[in-house]
Structures are given as C-alpha cells and as structure tokens.
Image 1 (tube, helix red, strand yellow):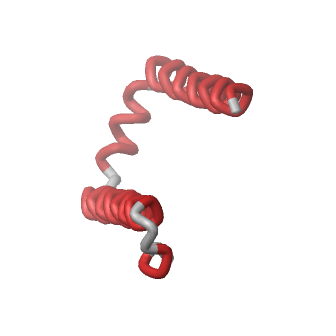
Image 2 (spheres, rainbow, N blue to C red):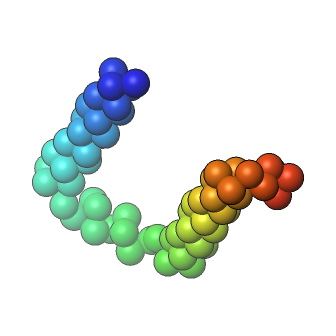
Length: 72
C-alpha cells in the first residue's frame, strides 16, 4: 500500500515539475492556449467530479450502515 502511495506521489511530482518547467520556458504559449479554453467545460468537469465523489461517499456510508441494497 505504501509503495503505491509513494509511486503516485512521485508520478504527480514529476508531472507537476514538467508542467512548471514548460510553463516558465514558454509563458506566452500558455497564455495563448489559455485564451482558447472554454470555461463551461471546466465547470462541467468540476460538477461531474463533485457528483461522483458524493455518490461514492454515499455508497460507503450506506455500506457501513449495513444497507447493502442501497449501496449499489
């Protein structure tokens, strides 16, 4: 389990480091690309993530309460 957590942390750190290096190397390219983004897609993705997290939390809560029928 700890190996998985460490591996995920290393992967995230690597991706974040590459992003920061690329962004500082070509800031204008990132600003130009950012101008083309549609905020509605970001809002939609955020709503999907929040609803999926909420539904998983409700399933865990139901399973812990012994209501396995409503947990699926």
